[in-house]
Amino acid sequence: MDIDTATETHTELHLPGEPIAPALARAGVRGAIAGVPDRVPDRLVADLELLVTEVVTNAVRHGGLRPADEIVVRMWADDCVHVEVVDTGSPFERRAERDRLGPSASGWGLFLLDRLTTAWGVEAEPEGKKVWFDLDLAA
Image (cartoon, rainbow, N blue to C red; front, side, top):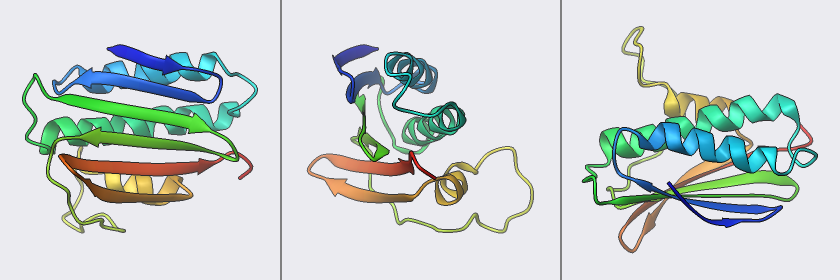
């Protein structure tokens, strides 16, 4: 994991496109939040860690990434915590609800984004996609 920027309001992580990336992302977010304890309420830290882990997991699992490909996680806080996860994988269509395929141990990431965030989306990038979300600090 390479942390390019870590200021009071902005963090950028560069992660490998490998299965270790979600754990590195979670640790990076935890470290960034620890550096600004009064900016993000404790009640949101677990949600933030979970959501970043889910989005990075999706990039690794479904993005068709090679180990040499990079996943970039950007996070900053103002009135909300804004997170962007950028990778070279193909964009996908946003689904608001979990597919009704019955119980499953996986496949909950987009459902959690829909339920726990203030807003989220998927945007095409010149070489891949960006999944972003906002968590309201005042909610």
